[in-house]
Image (tube, rainbow, N blue to C red; front, side, top):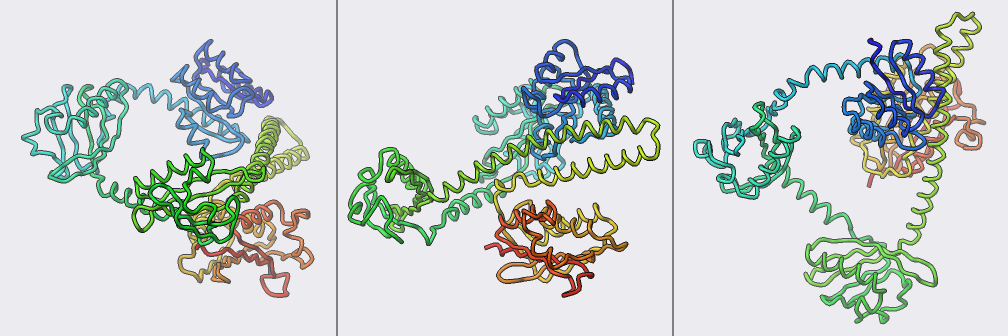
Length: 588
């Protein structure tokens, strides 16, 4: 590698930055260190760099923001983003903002050097391909129903059709005509505006539009791109009418069913066309209304504060206009305390009146706020701790890598191996803790239980390829209310079982069956077993005999409304291994 290749290291941890500098300079890279975002910006203003290695967390700016700033200053700068833990959302955001690569701590310097080499090679290749890129950009999707070519004046010049019925007119009537002579002016205007943008930027543009073809309205998706002649426009069109209709039907169905009236509603009112209360039903008499005569015959504005009245009136008017059910939330001050209510408005069967279902959701709101505050505080400390601990682990790893290149005696080599193994275990613990940081905020959805177990088995095969896995499913298409952490729940139990088994031939069994309005998943092993005295305290968070994995699984189960127990795999025979029984309720 030539010496003029310049690398900018941006990391607030000076020990990591200095270590990387030593390693890169040994590979004949010219390097500079920036310990903050401002230093990185100043360095980039002074001279051009081929590559920047950028930590996502800096004292004065986050790495994603700085990535965009540096890319804007030097569009040819290759940027490798480094972070303390992997997040699919962060990775996608980084790559969308222009990062050339995305790697996580602790850093393996051999892998870092390979990544740096690959990014630099891609930059060189990009430069070589820049001239031919214009010609190759117009490759058209082979699955398009119709491809049209317009010249610089907007006249049809060529076409390809898998389906001739997609043509608005026969081709001999379209060729040489301007767009506005064939399609409505509004569609033609959109074409000309997009064509101008494409010629200016070279970027493709995709639009959906509706057009009458053969006497029927069709929805089309068109991808517009620049022709290799540099002036003409290629439009690859696909008929998406069926998909659009399906989307609309699905949307309407979801709207109709989203707010099904709860049988536990606190109050149900019927309002006439003038928003006067004309009927009433209540499962209990709750404040602010003590009796039906307090509101029957009165108008909404006579009962509720003006701000709440306006909100409800706007919602009712919209429901009458769209004929769709809608829900709003509002608060009232009662006895010097705030109370929260949910009100669902729907059209009465008479087609004119409004049925309003009101529920007191004060406790739910309080619980949500308390949970959010607790989760935010916990995540804050978790992020701070994991970031700082990872930095220290990274410094240990990099120092160890330097020691590996020195002449060491046997005892020192063994000590170095212990250090490396301990760092890896610490890293694994941090990853396991961070894996469920979104547990409280992640919504539940219907999950096919068998699919989750199948995914688990694929992971198990990669991580523990020497373990014999036996499965038995006695249920067809089991569904549960869960989220993405369900696989983590099972993997924690399996990892514990496998890692504590000292037999030469390690074996596990996974069984799934119906049990008590739910499903029982049994995870069994041929390990040393768990004494009865420890079985009782295994799930006690104060004792933590089962390690972090067991207690993480308990937290996940609690969210799902499930439970877990531990038994001997063979009754009263401790030596034959352990059985964990996990019960999950069926999805309603």
